[in-house]
Length: 116
Length: 114
Image (tube, rainbow over all chains, first blue to last red):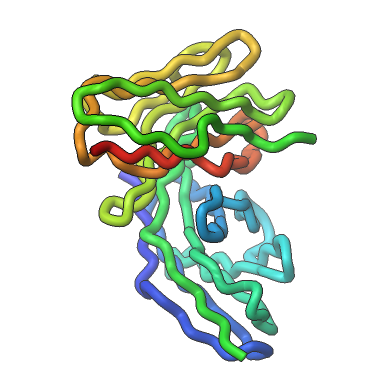
């Protein structure tokens, strides 16, 4: 069975500083990995995905993520945080081994708080 | 392009009643998935439909059901509501998993069961 772990419930960062939100995963086959962001009373917005290829994936709003197969990690990063980045971030995985379907398994979420 | 539209946005029901939630996917998207979000359990997969067929199902009781119409619009139904069914129900659409396209989520329906 596939699973995702986000070890930090909350991450606090000062505006202008780099941020990292951690994610590790477990799948049977090749991992298809995603990051989503959720603002209060809204649905999830897609940030970026890793399917195959370069280990550094660039996404929306200046976010990027680093895929590390040996450590089974897919950490979300941003060089310079903004107060408007404050939100709930979810890592998700789809197991490439299972045929068909868009079932994603989500982590528990990390609340990012960017302060002035 | 219009995004994923979910109606209604808020719903209050009483235990034992049933409820139907609606989802209109992004134009051209053929896959529709449903997720339940609660503070305790997080985001949990309910089911996925593609071309009017259920392609995947999560670990929820039979009280939870869904369907997809020929225009890709989807509905989910919860019968005999329980207090624990109070949650944000999110619908997401996608082109298809072959393209590894991401899920695009609606803003959800907030269901409160009293």
